Image (tube, rainbow, N blue to C red; front, side, top):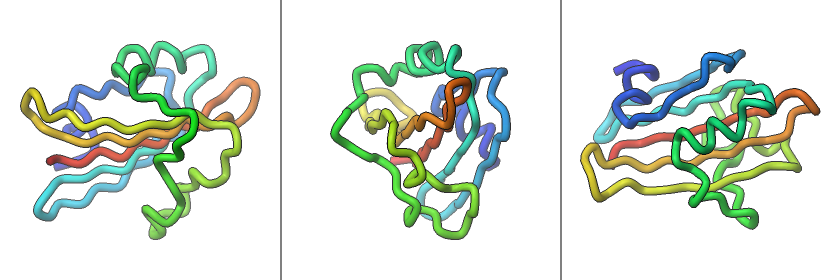
Length: 120
């Protein structure tokens, strides 16, 4: 299963304005995908709203760390001091999944978005 189909399976939409898209997948007992992309600051709030992440934001929680995916040089959530982060578990409606996310301030125009999605 590739990263696009896994994200679609869990109704996670990546905005067309996203750039520098990177993904890594693993299939074992569960399916898992790690995703990184750059997103214009002007599109970030719509991304959060469209994917129903607002209620899962936790200002005191860093859901992602570099050590979660050491094999990929592009996986650098620790590089961002200014970030919004959170996690959720969808267990009420199939497909069941867990999602962790971190949106870091890259510069005034761009945010870095990190996602980790796994089936439950």
